[in-house]
Image (cartoon, rainbow, N blue to C red; front, side, top):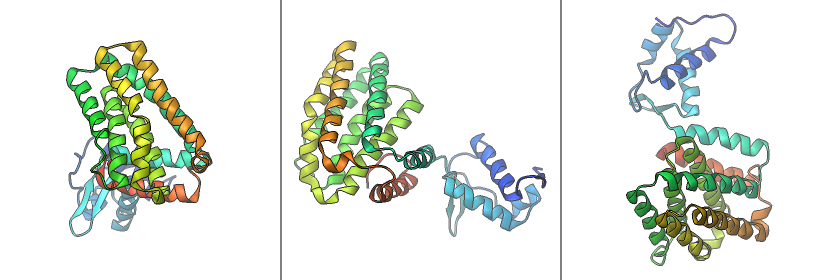
Length: 270
């Protein structure tokens, strides 16, 4: 029995800590149903309202999913958990989008180097397929669809690095940077995003060709050029260059993204 020491921190905080440890330790499988509140209350020797308070807190953290009428389920949504922590840091420090893009560029340069070392023919084919999809934007009628293809290309490279922590951080920055702009500038429309995407297509093509030839120097130069051109474009846009994650419009956009991540568990546009 997991009886809780009632001294020191509040009982609910101790329950939260105990359940969190059990979830992170793998006691409960992803999407498995948590025991009923009365059973947990008996196990920990506390009241059901205390258990309910702990469940509510863990639900807000993204570790549990309360489904009304069905029960409470374990939710190993790593992307959402990481995103909420990163969101707080970006907003507390009033980080600009340009600063985030600079960090994204450094991470991307490292991940493409790792990708070159371990990429299989299937990996490179997947990256090239994402590139080809960016050359066929004519049939798309929404900004979301265009941006999703931009996201897919960058994530295809990141995932090939085989470094889960690096890839997760990159995915978050990729989605935040692109989707924040899309949501904040809805008025720019699909034509703007198609035109913007095509500006960097030659950079993307150089990256893919360098990967296919297994040329380390060429891959590094291509990736650096890709991000430098993005940063140059960013700094030339008077609306983008002044945007910070603490701005009200950006905060709203990030909150919408977190809701999307909470539902999907991954970087998919809605």
